[in-house]
Image (cartoon, rainbow over all chains, first blue to last red; front, side, top):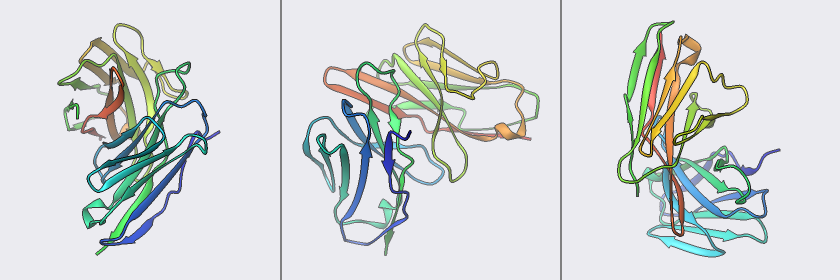
Length: 113
Length: 117
């Protein structure tokens, strides 16, 4: 049973447009939610964390969390070719589970110049 | 954000030898560290969870006698690939959990690319 689901893509977005990445999770009591960016051949880099319902903005990135619907999304405004990467959604399960953060398999994003 | 280092970044070894990879949290204490493996164009695969001062917890299908993990301090965990074979060639990535009031985040090291010849 998959616990964090993402569309694998590739998602192609024109340069300058908004890229929207979505993720759903199964554990309703999950506490914390993260977005990582992974360039090809590199390790994942944490770009956003969100802990409460609503929006959280950081530069061109906005994370959105809706615990009632069990989804978290990442918006990238003014997309740049350098945003082309795989984006991993990660969820910290309820406190009574083990320490593992659960990762989705990632969405490949391709920004078209 | 917090910084996690890994050493070496690349290693080539002969089949049958052992390789040790170090993972350090440079500016925070990590009670929990994780070891992942990633094959080309595939997803991250968690190998084991390492807690300081206790035995590592291995994921199903990961041989604990082949992949030895030691988490000797709050800033250092090591992974030793014993009797390496070509099929162990992969990208090994560690991560460390930073847990403070209101924050619970996991940071990755840059990874170690292992090639077994």
